[in-house]
Amino acid sequence: MIKIGVIGVGHLGKIHLNCLKHIETIDLIGFYDTNDIMAKEVEQVYHIKRFSTEMDLINQCDAIDIVAPTSCHHTIAMHALRMGKHVFLEKPITSTLADAQEIVTYSKTNNLKVQVGHVERFNDAYLEAKPYLHNPLFVEAHRLAEFNPRGTDVSVVLDLMIHDIDILLNMIKSPISYISANGVSIVSHQPDIANARIEFVNGATANLTASRIALKKMRKMRVFQPNAYITMDFLVKEADIMRLRDYVPEDDNDAFPLIVDLGENRGKKRIFIESPRKPSINAIETELQTFADSIINDKPCQISAEDGYKALEVAYQIMDIMEKQTQKIKQSPQNL
Image: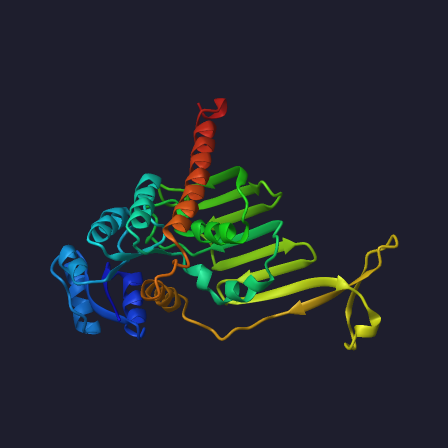
């Protein structure tokens, strides 16, 4: 059994508490939160011990689950790591690249596990599509959300787009060669809608759009690769696969096969449509379970601190480009 404590019991922290209570390999020993009203409510509703200080909780744990605001991640994580504890960190890993790098370096040097909560890696849609993802060449993603004041202290890139950045980097194993991006602030002091075009050395290209001022939610990703088109809907947690194969009439058992004539003596292709459906899982519970498993079996975390750093690095590159575009617009003659 792994003794785990939770730091931060806001909206997402409460979800983590519920999930941890259902994992057999985890002993949830308690929580800590600076908000006294929220902490008392959690004590009464969840019947979980409240620790008076962050350090007291960390001292009693084998591992700590940090669901506090991103600005607190680095400080809490380093306290835990220096005390020899394993760490689960909600995304993004930290507020700055320097802080993320310190966590990466310290955890590797001291053989401590750090997993980052990029939960979409455990979404049914991605798990269904993953076996079919081979050499993606073009990716288009839309992640739209209705406005919610929670999270508007950071750019929509860190709030929403970073989910798709992590998925993208997990799919395409090639260095990035070029990024262009634009973003606009509508209701907050940070960009609320953003678009980024990411080009890779291997020729792959991705177009990512994120917005937190949409009228309805959307979390879709479309992937094009040789002889295949794959769609993932992270909201409904389903994937659909369309693949092209050489058409062989002798092998055709369908009454109405989907046939494409390529013309110019290039022959015919048959379209196969598959909708693989795995048994639905609780993505947050699963990611916490894999974190515990990595500790128990001393194996790498499925989403490592390095993965968290790489996603954050790309996010900051996008935000820096957006900021330069904003400054360029402000300095243009028509705005002077």
